[in-house]
Image 1: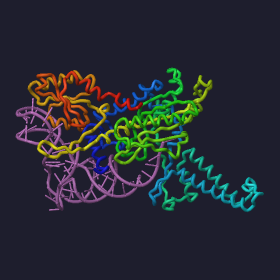
Image 2 (image 1 turned 120 degrees about the vertical axis):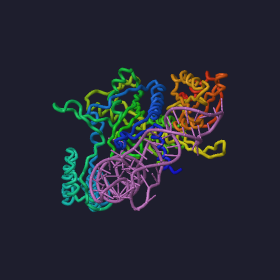
Image 3 (image 1 turned 180 degrees about the horizontal axis):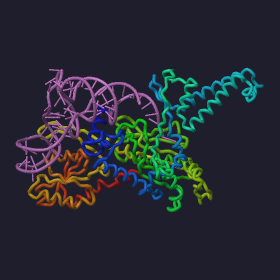
Image 4 (image 1 turned 135 degrees about the vertical axis):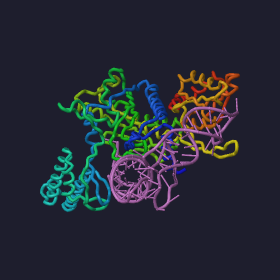
Length: 517
RNA sequence: GCGGAAAUAGCUCAGUUGGUAGAGCAUUAGCUUCCCAAGCUGGGGGUCGCGAGUUCGAGUCUCGUUUUCCGCUCCA
């Protein structure tokens, strides 16, 4: 099957079987926003549990928190989001290309610098040993002219940028006759600002309200609580703080189903370490995190690392874990060595000391941070797209047929078992209900008596239920049932009293955790 | 944001030169059925994405708009 077709079928399947719905669908939907349905929420919760327990349960030096979506606006100044998530964009009408207006101007500035440098180099070769660069720069008319132009442009540019003066940014581009590198024309649209952070107002607007943002990442909630957690939890470095929560980004283009949404959920763990040890920990977490992914059994080779060549200003190492989606290898998790950038920034902006006294070396320092950050929705998409299978099966009459089955790892499956009477009379429904009453405290169970047994099995396959328990006439005689396994479609006859253990053995997270060692 | 395509029942789709909406599956109530979908009978469900225009009459033609998909663009 073509990969594109698979993706379309998957989206349709998600909607048809209650996993993911477009948001506000009866009002024509809301672009790039989706809701999780009755099975989707179960799968999502299980993914979160797998992550949370692998962090907080399995590591005694990792604790979890849950911070508010609203935070003090200065936090986003300290983190750099107010400035950096705020790009002035401009389109060239001829080439249909979009550029960051500030980048275009910076490139123009760089051109002037290159011109000056060339003059200087020319002079250097001419004068040789006796060349005085500083003197040349302050006396040569051509260089001085260029330098003056540069200074003037740079000042005007900085001012326009600081004041978010979009009109002047465009005028700068026009005045300096900056052309589109592709079309070579100066047919520009107006400069528009796309702030990637959503904002709203807190407090009454009458007597001065506070502009607050919906957080564009959960990490800052951890950083600003570093001292609280370290002190109240008596945490000793190295230690980690984990958090799961919603984040919001006003993406210019948000597409590819739930892969890039404007409202999304992150699972982040910030690991605080002694400066100088961060790259060792970075390597440790890299290996541990890819094991966590591979433990799900979706194919060792469908994962790979993508090393960032160009690092963000705060990082000294960064790598993505990518998965082979139906639309290609895409990032599902990022592991970043963020240095002491964030904590130092908050120390600076808040004026509060954010440091750790390390008794082992008798020193105080701002801890370094290794971050693991994973998108819940991307994990969801990764898992459901890997689990989706269309299989050819042959029935008793030799007729070929397609079985759609979600081969979800049993611990993640929304419904763990379906219990069904083979026929809906002779007291079989009552026995089936009785089994559910026993097991419903431990597992998400479903009862179904409608339609032929084969059809009911297919329905459960479509939502990924790993076990189907069937009550037949023999059950009434000897308290045994058949249990049918989703992936093999094979059945075994077992005692009702053994069901709990058999199922627990499969849906337990321990099977996954054992692979993380 | 630009370009292309699409939107009819829960799903997949049909709907002729413009003449008051159909099928299969699904769903529901029964009957039948002892292990892998499509047996029988009955029921429910659509202002054809939305808004205008042309027309005696628009699912069908025109324009606008919304949403989705594909490509470009963007992406700490």
